[in-house]
Image (cartoon, rainbow over all chains, first blue to last red; front, side, top):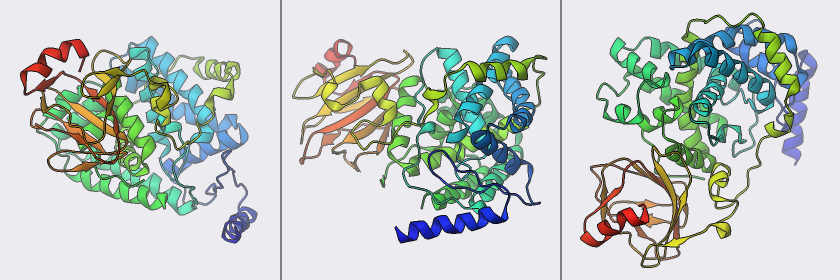
Length: 215
Length: 214
């Protein structure tokens, strides 16, 4: 118990120095990174935390301006008609608002988290069934989040995205078509153009980072 | 929980991309509710999806989209967005929606030699079922003409090569001919999904196949 209270006190010291310390509703303390090094990915994570903590409509609006048009386009590339894609993109953003408190910036970048919500909406829309959503479960161990964990996980994601962009065009196209639901899992299984070369090492690094944050 | 047998990268990517049939989704979702390690593996593939979303060029939203969304936000009851609780039971959260809350509530059907199964309702691209194998009992020797995933929920089983415990997934495909056998120390309960019927090597189980939906 002593250790725990020490830990909380340390966090509060940081709180005194920075202007905002959001507290997740599930009790996890985390720090919004208020410094000049914020890159765009950290920025979106921060927006989601502000939505969660303060119902910040301005943060939501900027998140919406960035992501909603991309989700719509992503869904259209996945074969949805414009009206369905619009509806689904809006639904995704509604869910982003309501589930903001479940976003854990030490486990996922904002873009990753929003992607999983959009993906689940796409599956629901296509099948009209309830997809099991383990994404909402808390992770098994109580995390002790640290600002650096947040920055690193966001950065890893940026590097992974870059690695996907840098893939030879055939491999890149396989990955993109999978995510646009343009390939079936059988086609992926039969695909000999994978393994994915450079992105595998990035995935390994991302995994190491997630494992580190699990301890 | 430390588990030894994980999904392969193609299946992780397929789940992350959202292109697995519902029955397989259920197995993967159940495994990642048991194991943070499994979940972390998946998360690194989902990050690819996030990257692709970021790289997608924008499509124009309707002029009132943001207002409409704020309207919807205010009209939705927020209660249902609470995180489910982590409970250490045999059935992890995602499975409960399909199989009921507890093991006791499962309606089993005998399929011979003490082996029981319960079919779960999913879309028809693949089937999911719970399987109860008594201690020390072997499943009929079979191979697969499609993909089969077997996730251990309780107890353990072994095949010719490996031991599978709670949280472990065995992936069966055309190349795998095996005879899984429940360990002697207790019954083994598994969640199984497959997108094709199993091919049994002996004649009689094959005749039973359409009848028992395995």
